Image: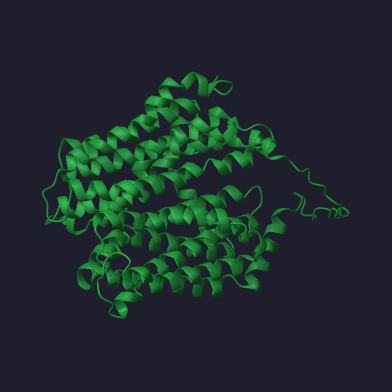
Length: 461
């Protein structure tokens, strides 16, 4: 048995950080930028709804779609603009996208800076804020694919897992840091002051990336990569002559053929990815509902004054729990883990139905994150195993579509429930609200249980 099979969960968790220290400067640049963007993105997301309420004058019902525009917009933007990362150089794609996001974060608060009145829906300050969000969405659509494309450029088959693990690790660590930055800034200078700091950090990240991800650093990273690809005896591998360019004739397919071969034409695959939407709504409530819930229901307490401690805890928990759960459940079948994980996650809001206390709040956050750690890594594994030979990429791409729908659909009703059950100033009926969210989420594990044999056919042992 290999050493990898005996690797301890703690080592798997810490290895990305060890590898980060040893990485070439080009990878340092990518990971620093990704860390800072995770910090800024999740930091702003946790108080974005509060910004629209306090500075733009939107109601709870309209605040939710505005936050949703950012989250589902990023997913849609990656679908449209992600290919630019394959055309542009790592330096240009990273720096330009960071500058675009930085500009968007400046524009987001520009209306407040200019003293525009809090005019509510479709007022001048609202349009300015929307334009700022649009710039953030566009920049993010290039940034995330560019980061992964850059890791692919600066790693080989042996170091690629480390490179991608580093991105995952630093993003989650960055998402937890606002817990310590946002509350004191918000109390001293309001959400406006928090956003100014985050906008400055975003622009500083672009500058730092430009300074670190130079042509020299890029060339050095490629030299290290080439050295790693040499033969074991130290002799460089023989260069393979480039094949002569050939004219590729692409077969034109009729609309009917394209539809029949589309991944969504696979009924099992389509059912599987779309039935996950109910439990995925709990992800969206992390930024659409939880910040308002904690700040209002726990008003006056430490957690109410520092609600970011609750809303930004999930990234840290996922960073810790995923390697642990993966190590201990790697021999468990995919479908069983999907059922167990979605059940744990779907039932987690029942803790908030019991009573709104600090204990039940943090118990909910831990249990929900545990459920996520159990099923989320297996989701794409199932999609890949279900794909026919040569179609894995297409299946993996389409598997992300329900996540886009989840963000968009949840943003349309989350604010309505917030206004109905936990309106600003009270009275609060938060237990009823979380019972409704639980009722929606449990549809997923129930459906997976009933369809288990069908979904696991040809895959389950």
